[in-house]
Image 1 (spheres, rainbow, N blue to C red):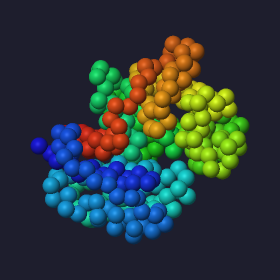
Image 2 (cartoon, rainbow, N blue to C red):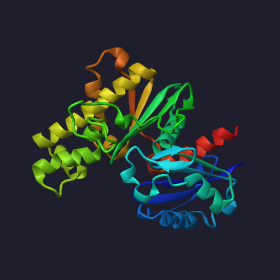
Image 3 (spheres, rainbow, N blue to C red):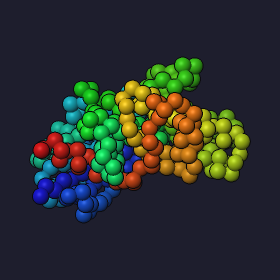
Length: 292
């Protein structure tokens, strides 16, 4: 029986959990430190790991950003500040003296969602629509991570060549149109600088016509992304997650748009089942699969 200490590093909080046979026996979380000082991340990881690692056979880390050879980076390095090129794997090994496995958080969540599917599926994509847009992709029952750790960054495929510039540096990415950040930015033009994605969605649920246009454009963009993944990777199922992906009525909008496409561009749609613990559970499951 292998016990895993799973860690999930997000933009606002860091969580740690002891997981055995897919069951979480202990869960704690702290605020993610400022990204301007790598030393602050060292201290936060030490706080999370100390005392829990003694009960773990190995450690699995799901983190925002790109994981390449155990090092944390990003398509937009500015987002990480002083944490760009942070040696995440070696630092956790140094603190814990345990075997360490490190993976992108959307990839980890995608693996958790894949493992939770009730039916036998070989090819699946998990798309999370929240602050940004990320994905985890499983092909032939294997999670794609890629030689550079980039696999699954589907939020940065082209949606509109004339669109606004994305944080990654490219113009018109899916993320620059469909994400909660993009939705909020579109709303600022109408409702002022206080506006965010949550406010726009509230207006959408109140059937405000301007908010409906913004959310509809987001859903149409995600539907096109689903179609692109379906026709290129032959995914059988697409699972939507994240605060926007799970918001009331959103999947129905995406499904309605998808219904307009030819059958070869369509996949079954469902909403995420693993909730906020998907990154923790998926990282543990993925690390365990590498040991077999």
